[in-house]
Image (cartoon, rainbow, N blue to C red):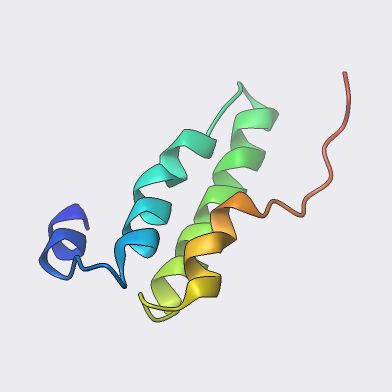
Length: 72
């Protein structure tokens, strides 16, 4: 995946490439917390891979976490 991103890297696709590269940072926790974060990761990755690379919405998507989190 990284190889494909670097082949298509340009000013227009930079945000998209960064968004995809940063996705693994969102996987955190242990047990059910980790499984939930993996589920969010997979949904975001699928959405990023499905949209055009130069789409501004696509590059902004990973920073917009609309899921509700429980406070401990």
